[in-house]
Image 1 (cartoon, protein in one colour):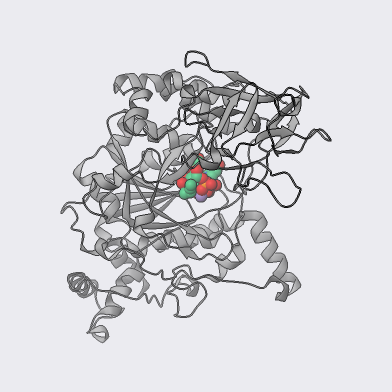
Image 2: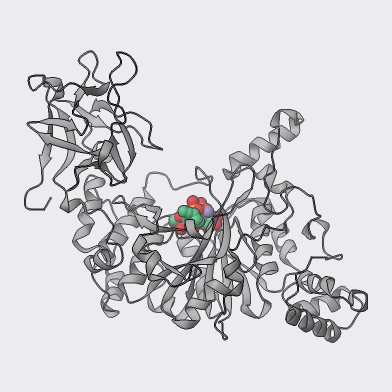
Length: 581
Ligand code: LR7
Ligand code: MN
């Protein structure tokens, strides 16, 4: 019985897929596991024509691979909440280890079915979209290093269960030299029945960039889709990623990435109108920002793909041959980071487009720290980023270099990568900024830049502390000359900027007697509380107050009535001459 089933699987993805289809048919009792493959195939075809909404039943698979029961934890993408204090001592240990090993709540993930159902959060318009009649088939490449079993398999099943069978050529898992037991023989057993799934392993820790390259080189599909190993693809995720590529092979397409909560595994849906596009700051870190008005207007329908200056990196589709022509990824990049911007710039500068498909929903577990081991004594993210800056940024690379104190470190040889840029006659970074990302703040167009040093205590600089979400007040701190939290710019519109954050003075007078603090807040480009002038060494805010360093300690900073003779209100900042640094 099992043999016969495997036979069928060869043709139709996974046993469960057949069973889902059969489960939905009105003549269910006529076609079950005991029926010959041809009959089951016929049933499948009929189900396809019926556009069946189906449930999974896979009686001969391991129980845990089976379909979720209604009401089981996390169904429909709901949150699973655990009261840790109510757990037994052993369970509590498991709970803590789960967090420690994964930087997400593995304990909760393990409770959720490997094949849980998700709510269909697509916009109703998405279901009416007519896709290109000849969508290319795809190899889905999922790389992992020490991923938890439940998140990894849930990623795999979400692809198998929610991809039209003729569009899914294969799933390639690339194990980047994991050392966890559950990823050895156990994983091979887990995927044994899934004939479309292959497992490759690197022979040493390569990092995500070379791990993906390994998968890409081996892939047979026309399109490559990369996924992180803790994702969940929602119903209808695949076609919107392939459609733009069917129309123009020089595009990379990203899905609408939903947040899977790291603690509850709730899938938090994003309405189509709130889609954000990718940008970057001059630390060359990816960030999200609101889709510009102009781009919203360019599109005819809300289901049309949105142009995005950059991608987050983990989840995207690209034509295999074009990816090859682009030189794929830079194999000189290690472990993590940089490859996302490298590919984004390359796609745009070399004649392609980067699009976000609003009808393709894929969840990703966002976490707050990296759980795995990183190489010691070398800053791999910096190395990767310098490599991409050298190849793609032209003169604009200086802005990044200013931020790392012009210490590039040993970044290896990039001449091969430059040859690719040459061969493809890719456009300049200026072209990219002017045409693809005109909203970007360009430091070279700012009025002042660098550290802001106190005149009263000349070893003290304005410091943003670590800027998270706004409300931390800025302070005086010994000048360290390392840029970072002490590197500010005055924009042409009179903001004092540090990356995407602006010095912001929210209150005229604060609570009784207490002088008001200055905070660092996301720049909103509306002047108001973020508008300053810098004259005679003084920072005067739109409210009329001036920035002052406490005379009692070297740390507190607040706003005060302006006194041109008060040295604690005097600051030295470098003026930019001739628009150059
Ligand atoms: O050495 C490694 N080997 C690996 O195989 C390190 C990581 N990996 C795997 C890892 O198991 C995972 O599947 O690589 C994948 C990405 O690693 P994460 O999940 O630690 O990265 P992330 O989600 O924090 O980081 C984002 O940025 C990275 C920059 O290099 C990659 O491009 C990730 O793919 C990317 N993730 C996303 O784009 C998902 C959306 C999140 C955002 C923003
Ligand atoms: Mn990830």
